[in-house]
Image (tube, rainbow over the protein chains, first blue to last red):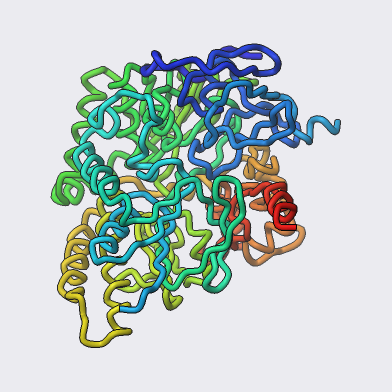
Amino acid sequence: MSGPRFRRLAETGRPPVPITVDGVPVAAMQGDTLMTAILAAYGRLRVSDFGDGPRAGFCLMGACQDCWVRLADGRRLRACTTYAEPGMAVLTGAEEGTDAR
Amino acid sequence: MRAERVVIVGAGPAGMRAALVLAGAGLRPVVLDEAPASGGQIYRRQPPGFTRGHDALYGFEAGRARALHDAFDAADGRIDHRPGTLVWNIEGRRLQVLHEGAPQTLEFDRLLLATGAMDRVIPFPGWTLPGVYTLGGAQIALKHQACAIGRRVVFFGASPLLPLVAAQYAAAGAEVAAVLDTTPMRAKLAAAPGLLTGGKTGWKGVVYLARLAARRIPYRHGITPVEVLGEESVEGFAYADARGRRHEIACDAIAFGYGLKSEWQLADLAGCGFAFDAGNHQWRVVADDAGRSTVPGVYLAGDGTRIGGADLAEIAGERAARAILADLSDIDPGDDLGQGAALAACARRIAGQAGLRRAVERAFPFPAHLARAIPDDCILCRCEAVTAGEFRAAIARLGPHDVNRAKAFSRVGMGRCQGRVCGPAAAEILAVVRGVGVEEAGRLRSQPPVKPVPIAAFADAAEGAA
């Protein structure tokens, strides 16, 4: 897994929101979208349904639909328009197309 | 006046201004918006708990953004604002929505669609790798989340957002590796007089360029994107300069785009007429000079109809609201509500911006030739991972006449985004293979739901009702 993708430039004094990404604890902050929370720690959000590699979102405004992530509890969420909540357990490699192979 | 339900979809500058005008006339419009707070994309608010001021978030537009936010907030109670609401279908006079995850049906008498826009893009090799974003997306990361999309960013394309977002990144402390404009220098110079005589907008652009120059950030014209360097994520960007020489820049993120593209899906489902706009090289929803669509009772305003930016969107929002008031007053003759003069004033202000709109279109022209030249092994449809070569082969084999038939043959445009992202480039490719103008290739039809909705929400609702 590659290093952090997003770089925090300001607003870094917010209260923490504990989540995990692929089982590893990640220090999200209150007001982070799920996308920010994941990409401030990791290099990808998901893998393409068709095996052409990792993805990390694209439009950030709920239009391109390329940031849907799966949680360990089975929920699927659009990462750019969902705020991180305590206890969310994201699985970045768990898209259905990849599971099936 | 008979009590009619007026529903506005979208809480950006067009929808907010329209709601304020309607509220001022004593109506209580319903405003439906997906986001948790009003503002749309351009005046998007940061989440609660963030502390940056309006100047940091909106720059030159801070005053306008603050005025609109404050007025909208002060009208709370006179506007029925329902954030967290996705309108996913229109059937006749009924909207089907998902509100905070629960399905609802909402009837309307008059509907204003102020659905905004997204970046228009053209795929290039490597564009699906982690680290490549739209210009608007890069701006949202900064404005809404106080994040840069990487440590060292290349910005490219042909868009008013190009100098703006690059300058915003530099000011916020991000490293901007280069700003690369696909527009040839001579075209930019030809557009300059129109930009600089069209009000403050052009001069703001000059300030962004000066700020980039002061930081010694290279700004190049007439470039052609070649490819992203890197296997698993962005490690660099290769482009050809105006003379065709290849250059490579080390970076870990890329933001690009070619202007904006209307989010017109709901207008399509409502049955509104469309026309091809040659100046902007894309389809727009047809509206009369008061913002009425071709469907009675359905009105249009802002970038969701025709790209013009935030200031025009706000005027168009007011115009559509006044058209609604004028049309309502027709039901009760004798009460004209004085809308005629106000409508004429809006029309004059919009006409006054026509020159600037044309200059912006000339300064940042859509480089359709790049779409036609997408290499065969480059992914065209990122939802379904279909390459440009597979798309061309399907066209050659099966001979579709429009993009909808081509979609059936290739799955390009059939994914989760419904062709929002790949649609413009797919139409260019189809047009060049068939040897026709791009308007002949048509535009991808919209389908309900216009965005993915979880089927579980409907199952849960049905169970709750049983």
